[in-house]
Amino acid sequence: MIETWIWLSIVGAVLQNARAALQKSLTADLDLLGAAYTRFVFALPFAWAYVLWLAPAVELNPTFFLFAVAGGLGQIAGTIWLLAAFTTRNFAVATALSKTETIQTVVLSFVVLNELVSGLGLAGIVVSLAGVWLLNPLGAVRRIDRGMLNGVLSGLGLAVAAVCYRGASLSLPELPFHEQAACTLAAAVSLQTLVFGGYLLVRERGQLQRSLASWRRSIWVGLAGAAASICWFSAMALVNASYVRALGQIELLLSFAVSILWFKEKTTRNEVLGVGILTAGIVVVLLSR
Image 1 (cartoon, rainbow, N blue to C red):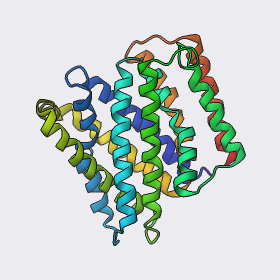
Image 2 (cartoon, helix red, strand yellow):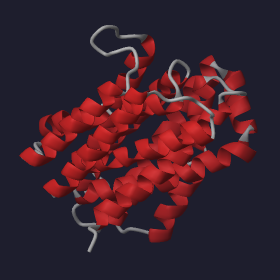
Image 3 (cartoon, rainbow, N blue to C red):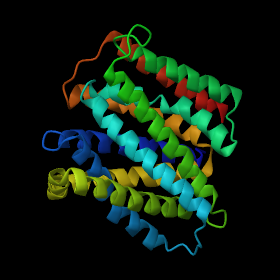
């Protein structure tokens, strides 16, 4: 029988890929910040509907809020950097570069939560990282360009988010995993909506207005993002975030399909080889569990 965290991770990857594709389509009318904000503000009602539906009986603690705040800010940064990467790399390659978050999550999980992955699991993650480097057409060693840097920084922000969201869930041991995830999601999205919205209100009021005015399309970004987060948060409440994010690289297979079929972008032989190596790394991670 497939473990619960596995199918949650896979469904989360599918939904996240859909959210990213929908969000990229918004950049035709919104700038990077405006498009990034839709991910949070339109996920907010769905996140709170979920937590109110579950109605967990819990008393939140300072540790929970500390982790939720750090995770929320990390995800904001990761989202902005990912959208910035989309403007300088094609959809699939930008997504792939952000997947350096897997190895960064391993390091942060040990430093922050004192959690380690198995030797085989680490090997699978390193194999996946090799695939990521192949997906950089210009060669990571020969040249580090802005698109690559944005992708890797996106991975760092998302790694911080993953580890801190698991930390927030673990700080509520009295709840079942799905209620831990619901509380963490509601707190994080609320913070993100307020912080990011406050910044736009002061610095980019026009983008804030256009973001809210795009609700007919952006509501789908929010729904897909909230559903993906519910899956991710639930999976990370069950196992080390490093395993969840490593398995989540199945999103790359989907991103290449979207890149070719939807955005009509071309891919190279190295990119196809990179996807194959990433897939092998995912299989090794699964075997390690």
